[in-house]
Image 1 (tube, rainbow, N blue to C red):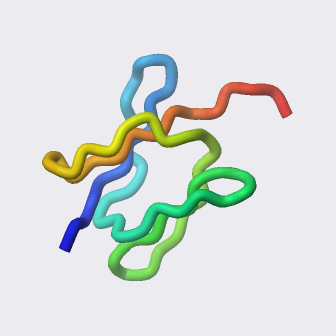
Image 2: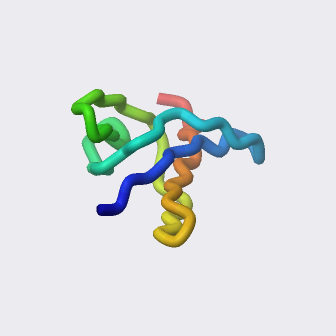
Length: 66
């Protein structure tokens, strides 16, 4: 089983936003994360890096104006 920790990279600063993530889905308005316990969080941004060895996903924060 591959469980990941998700970080947001905002201008070079890394912030952990969710642990025990089992699902990462692309949605119209961002990235939907789901934990092993079913908790969900929607992040605005795009995937910058996935490292299966380190069990990490890095999301680059969307800084574009809407």
